[in-house]
Amino acid sequence: MKQVEAREQALTALYAADTLDADDIDTSEMSARAATLAESTWSNRETIDRAIVASASHWRIERMAVVDRNILRIGTYELKYMGISIGIVIDEAVELAKKFSTAKSPAFINGVLSAVATTDLPEPPEQPSERPEEQADERAHEQSNEEASTGLDMTESNRSDVVPSDQTTDL
Image (cartoon, rainbow, N blue to C red; front, side, top):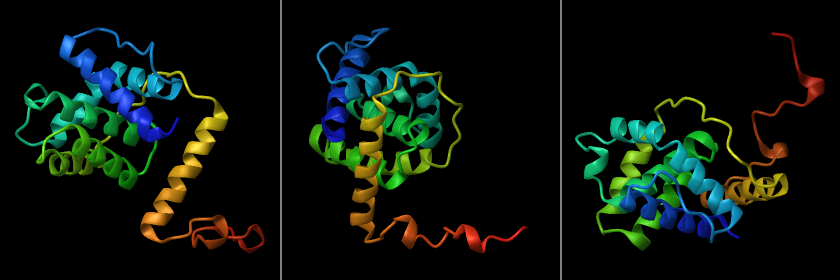
């Protein structure tokens, strides 16, 4: 399953749990990747919500549209706890907003997530992880997407911050 589809499934589950004010999230009919994202986001929502509120001036979390707040939760979780780059997180969150929310939501999501990127969050508790090969595939896919969108080749041979081991000096 593609990460885009996993995000959509996770958003659906988060929306349902949020609307019903549920303690737990129903992940029985979704992929493992989507279930992990939904469960991890939901279980860390109090911390995530504090970061969102701190970054969304003059907005209380309960006043945000349910769809928007859950897109922001997913984006914040991916940004802060999964280490996905801000460009990818914002792009994917904006696409979710275009598909599932109002015409003004993409700009709102973009602004809030840009601000969230500068906040510090505590480390999350241990979460169930996907299979290591799926994580590696996803990181490679996201890096290739970032390279395509920026036009940069980030392989080690082309990165300026990589110094060959025979050229290192003591500092």
